[in-house]
Every structure is written in structure tokens, then in C-alpha cells.
Image 1 (cartoon, rainbow over the protein chains, first blue to last red):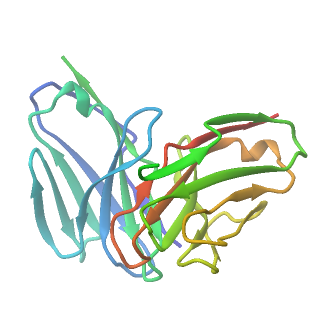
Image 2 (image 1 turned 45 degrees about the vertical axis):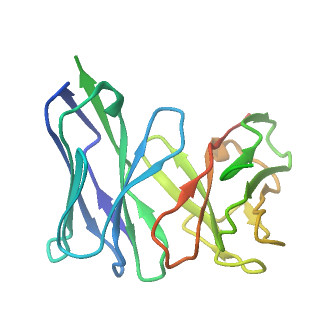
Length: 109
Length: 113
């Protein structure tokens, strides 16, 4: 089975940095994904890691350590519009995505 | 149509009734998926289709059926709805099962009473 853990909620101040951790235990590994989901909307793709290391895309960065079964999503220079849920997902050997329950990030002024 | 659409947007349904949720994409993606999203549980895969004419079971398939008669459409049917099927349903597609990004539709909010 798949087991993907991430914190339920995080709060941060506008302009600050927040790091959302994700740990996983899955049957096989074909990549780790981060999606952003605003309340009442569909998830949208943020990042993909398949090799160890840091992937940077503007204000957002994602890190992966396959040996530790660990990833994080780093959000820099937080803006109010970054208030959303962030979903960690792992693609297993059969190419299916398994999602964590999501981390709700609230950005305060 | 641009991207992936779902209908209806929301629906209230009596238990025992049959319901089909519609999903259409115009991106010529081979793979399509149905997920349900429940508070505290995240997105869970119900059924998937890697290409037209084929379907497979996901993590929570019981009580649901799908068909994939063509590339664009992937309807999800609840043969006899039960209150535990109250959820938000998302359809998604990707170029192929091995491709990375899944594009999600806007979702259908279903309430079974």
C-alpha cells in the first residue's frame, strides 16, 4: 500500500518562507509531484522530482531524497494568493498517483 | 472546449438513484482518471483508463463503473448511490500513463441523501 504523510496546516506571514514536508512509503517510485489547490478549485501542477536534489521554479522549489522517502516544497516571498492546499503525490511502479491528504497554508498579512 | 470539463457542477441525489458524472477533454490525451476528494483523506483514485477501450480499477472502485468508448469522454456511473459516496469528484487526464503532469477538471460536488 501507499503511505504519504504531510502536515495538516501551516500558517505564515506575507513575505516569509514556508517549508512543507512530505514523507512517503510506496510500492515503487516513479516520481514525486506537488500540486496546488485553491479552495473550491481543481488541483494544478506545481513541480515534479524524480532524481535527488532541488528543483527551483521561481518562488517555489521542491526537494527530493529517495533514500529517505522525503520531499519538501519551499514557498518563498509568500503572497496572499499562495493561501491554498498543497498536495504531495507519488507515482508508483504502475504509474498511478497516490496523494497525501494535503497541507493547508494560510498566509497572514 | 479548452482543456477538461465536467458536468454537472453539483448535484443532490437521493440514495438508490443512478447517476452518471460526465468528463470530456479536448487535449487528445490518452490517459484519463477519476478521483474522489474527501476532507482529511486527500484525492483517491477510483478508476482509470490508459487508452480508449481500456479501463482499470483504482484504490476505491466499489460502487462505481466507467467506460471509455473514445479518446475524449470518460463517464463515471454510480449504479445505486449511497450516502458514503457524497464527495467532490475530479476527472483528470494526461498525455499517457507514463507522462508526468495530470490536468484536472473543475470537479463535481455530489451529495447523496
